[in-house]
Length: 477
Image 1 (cartoon, one colour):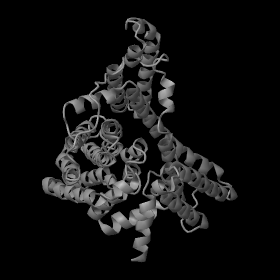
Image 2: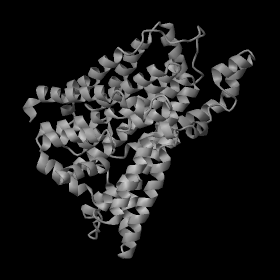
Image 3: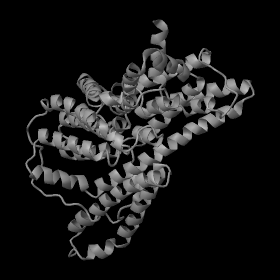
Image 4: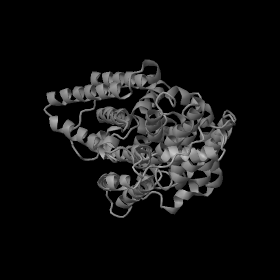
């Protein structure tokens, strides 16, 4: 019993991307030093646990989440490097950490482009104009709660859950930033809906993309998860619905119009998503490369806006106030300002987490728990546990760990783990990229503690989605 609890605790902390472990165990090097029972392993676990506690108490300590994980990542890899240097094996550590950095680089550039587009649309008053239209339409907070949730569920299978969540959160912040309770519940609803919507499409989440790319589930078979995903979102949404007041957002009657270029920027963002998907689907290139190409669309369009700024300003009857409203400031659409406004704390947090768990994986903990979960517990309990654990660490590394293990399972079990890894991260705000990104975007309002209060309700939806999967997809087991 004690060994099982120990292994579960270790997997809770370590079921992660672990490119370093994959390197060490898949032929990248025949020289490997197991450190699971070494003082380096114990200290690394302790430091990671302390760092994660500081992340979860950010709203109390006011210590930004990136700081403890960045520091811990450095210490863990220093300890590993010292041991390997003593055994005259420095190259093994260098190669392993480069694998981690490569994984982070793809995530970093993807997030950076998405955040830059969000900031660009905000500067062009896209969300303020949407807020104005929704307010003038007479929609109350409860209706807005359902609209943003439904849009998140519908858009995320086409784009991805992270980008969708960032977009919808920006709308929520523009609509109800003075109503913190509404923003909190709407953000929780967006995270759950975006993760659920992304679970039944190979393009909706990186986890589903990995499963599809591996050839385990074909494109059409993902849609067998549509009904379980819908249940996963609707159950907590219906319950949270009753906590939303029916009052309307406060706002003046003044109509807000988008600045020049607002609609083209939205179109370019859509084209960026299409480019990223096409890069991966047709050219077999990383989606990040497509996102970076999409950033060039925005940079080139920003250059066009700058060059034609004075021409359009002269046509507004020399009314400076009206020109500023319609066109923006005189430095028309400076793209580097948008990059500078990206949520850097979130980006550095991801770096720290990936390097931390990559180091812990390189130490050798993954093998301890993989045998326990799929060898002793059985596929169903293991796959349900994977979803629960993905709420504590990120769902992307959890799925990568499962794909690295490649347990012998039925088709229904592979669909189950795809579902649980996709939606399980919704139970905590740190369990998915969407949740972590929204903590940065709605800083101080959507928090770990605020999300935690509604975790039992989200867990109820999680259980209902699993039951629905066994009911509607029973023939696949």
